[in-house]
Length: 144
Image (cartoon, rainbow, N blue to C red):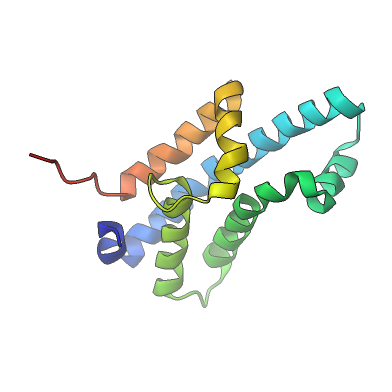
């Protein structure tokens, strides 16, 4: 259990979710652009709609599901007038877990981390998400 879980408040979580939403969307878009470029290099040009169907239905892109689901759930929590403080706090923890140093999704990271190394656009977008995550995640305690 991290310090974040006990210290996150509803106002902090709500502000964080609003602030991290656009960087997450930009990251998702950057990943999809890179994946489409790679797909088209191998298989030829496809329309945006065709590529979306490939991503949704193709097993090669299932690893992207956790990020897509995270963004959809974040939008749901922000748009739901009946969302509870605990729901917003839980959503904030889900984002920090996905992009924090601990408790990361291994299946996602196996595909995502190599993209960070090869795509400057994805690396920049990731940096913007990471900056938001660091803003709400306490620094580790210093070791003597």
